[in-house]
Length: 170
Image (tube, helix red, strand yellow):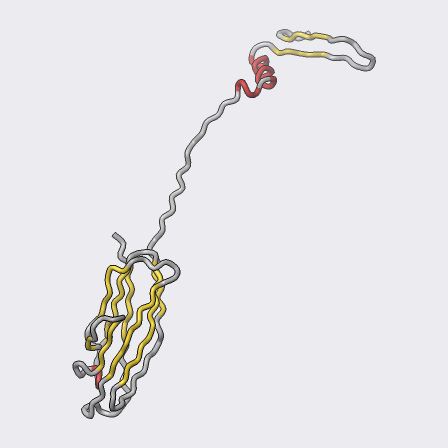
C-alpha cells in the first residue's frame, strides 16, 4: 500500500470486488467537493449595462418639379413635401440664385407653406420647432402662385428651390 492511502475492501459478492481509496489531504477535499457540490459551490453575479445611442434621423420626400404657365388669371400649383424624423425638426425652403424673368420681379411668383402668408419666391420660408413625426411622417403642402405680366419676356425660366430639413437636438 502506498503511503497516505487507505484501502478498504467491502463485502464480497460473486464476481464483485469493491475497493475504495481515499486520499488524505487535498485529494480528500476534492472527494468531499465531488460528493456535496451544492454545499461548496461558488457563485457571483455581475451586471452588464447595454447602451443604445439613437441618433437623429431625417427623411425627406420632395417632388422633382412643378410647372406654372402664364394665363390671364394667373396660376397656382402645389406640391407635397414629406418629412419623417425621430427628433424635433425645422424645414427651410430657399431659392437658389440667379433669379431671372418673372422670378426677379417682386411679388410675381409667390409661395407659402401650409396656411402661412404668401411670400415672394425670392424670400426663404421656414417652419421651426416641429415635433418628431415618427415613421408616419408629416406632409407639408407647398403652394406656388404666378401673376403674369406683359413685362415678362417670352421664354422658359427655372428656379431651383432648396428644401432643407434639420433635426433640432438639444
